[in-house]
Image (cartoon, rainbow, N blue to C red; front, side):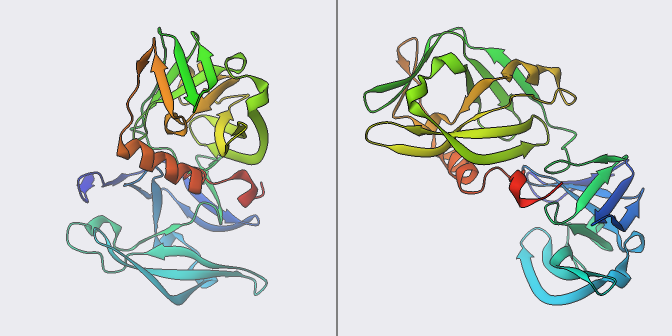
Length: 277
């Protein structure tokens, strides 16, 4: 079953065992979940009948989506002790074209623990249609901030990922250490693993959290990800000049907007510090 919700959205059956927990309390268990794919991070929707609704209290909070309608929200309260505000939402009267979500609700991944087939979801649930590939860059890559040469290498790779701009990854030796300043940001990507971050600092500019590294990339989604181990990932739009064999690389407004969004909200996958494991 697949139901289109717009040009880039769809709902489909999710053939997995889903369990939602909070502080080791089981909030929901279901073999009949739906997967809504509309952004970088899909959402799992579970039937109300599979959720502990006696622990949920409806709130007056609501949001509106033009493709799905008005969402209602619920607070969680377990044994009159532990509570979380607006942890769950549902489209109780979805707009035409969105029939599959009626009678289903979803939880914020950063507020609960989600287990799929017994494994804890890190970041967000995976999109089964995602494609990730890594290939070598055969040209010399040079990146500058003003006149400072930040990157100069013939050993770069490019990671291509559905829904995101291509990303250059370069060996640690490609960036002089004087330009790198450690950040306290850490993120988890459900496809690639845990990343730590660096700022780029020149005499005239500090650009925060624009370099990252996967020291132990996860390879269960695709073995290709092993190729970026200990390589430094970069946002192309960070730099004033990007050259391949001396030829300028052009970026567009879509890539710039994506990079700004990633920097403002450190990937849709959530920062590790937001959730204690």
